[in-house]
Image 1: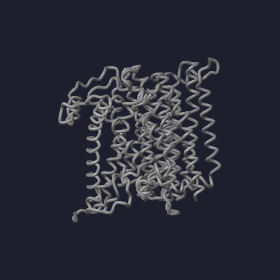
Image 2: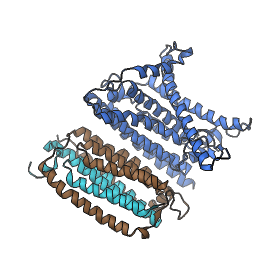
Image 3: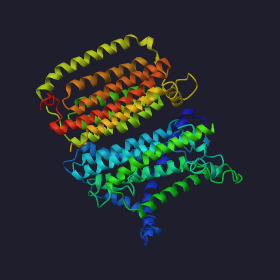
Length: 352
Length: 169
Length: 100
């Protein structure tokens, strides 16, 4: 590596990081679908998919092949540019947010931090911004389908997403107050002092904010119990009625990609990210490689816990009706988030 | 390379603005404006205004333009037609805009040596704080009153919008 | 190193395209959109000058312009909705008299 300049090393390692993260995210999306089907199946006292491979592990590959090979219909009266653009916007916004998430502790190889793709000073705002842009994928898909039911479904879903974005943003202010920065690396490091007790959920007393964040995130990703716009029994299939084969697969992947992003952000902000819950109680063991891999394993375990929670809530709770959903977002979550900000800033002001 | 960043996103912004001008359906104009706003966000970031770039994406193109797109979809008024009024406006509007552009760019280009140059990515390094600390330290100490007044302004705007858009019963 | 004048000329181009769109278009919503384009061009000018003079006031002004533009867009679109409800058209040539 000594014959390449610093910049070329940086470029090469960045491209490598992006490729690895992208491949892992896409594989996770496919296997999250399988996880959901198995977990919901077991909760409903039946096996999920279990025939295709051992324990159904090859099911996502077969699903992918099926979606590829299906006929790609495009109705005559759709607006073609927007019809083709909408799933692209949805999927790319779901995948880009992973770029600012730190997976593990700070580990530099040749001067490049390998467990985070981009260390941006305003990382939290980048995630909020990309969530805001993802709304266009939903809005444009309903509009370009040239279909009453798709348009209604997409307008409902757009209104739901932008209503809950406010509560989502406000619930994160308490964490920013505690960490003193919007940088995700700084937020993770402010929770690594004493293991379990210094995580924002326990030691930072942000459990109200966590509750608000969870509800708002379920509504943002259009998942149960807020999945009225895309339920099969309402409005045909909502905003992706007219999509088939690859474009439908992109919407599907975008939904599960959003789930994974939300779980990653929740572990970073409330549960300490890559720090272990035992803190300094366990002595340092193993070599450098083990010490680098261990935080990543903790991070993956926590994200897995959140995905399980998502699926558990889906199989347990009934759906909200649309007016109940909107009044819950505006009349309950938003005032609660503002009250959380006031109480948190009061506590911080008194402590100083 | 910094010049390449400016040229690519500047050309994208101008292309979006021209598309806004020449499209007939309002939804295409609204989406072109979203493209303009995102490329302006990149230009703000390149000048060190990170908070403004994020605010531009979150507030302007992620909320205000969604409102525009929502209203266009709800009202669904269709494409514009060529009427007598629009042809008259063409003959006045295009020369007028061109005249304003020529005046402004003459003033800017004749002073270009006095204006200096932009260090792309350079931060306002007055106090060693990062951009968002500087913005917030001024906004919450010296400019607290305007900040609170703008929140009241937004409250008034919300009430006004709800009252105006309500169906009469 | 990009001269500041280039950013200002870009803002001038966007502003004049906004003026042209404001005068030419016949749909009320598109006229509103061109107003937002003009505001964005002015924001770019403010940020460029804030960078040139190394002061934060330009960026604070842009913040306030964004807030005011949001409030204005909300109220303006509400007015447009109520106009559409009564006149059933969005063409400015047909809604230019107080008497319907």
